[in-house]
Length: 106
Image (cartoon, rainbow, N blue to C red; front, side, top):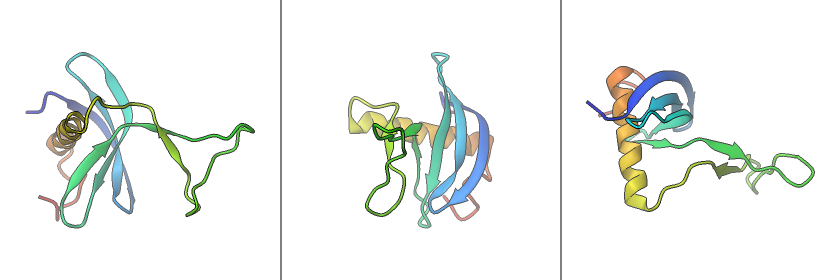
């Protein structure tokens, strides 16, 4: 059982995105809009909430590819902390919502 608990999952399939989770941590902290992703090879990961980048005039900023740019709302002290957090979030989603990532994933 994961120390992180997935309280809700809202499916939304687009590219690697599988949906958004609400996760509760042992400390009582709750994060909404944690994005849950999975590749065709079965690798899954979580990303913390992000917000659109806004220019000085209040317009959303797009990258050269035309996609909206997002800025981190939550950051991690080092890569291994982020990896551990991601793995725990994915495990919590798989535990409570087994079909969330699709049958072809490990």
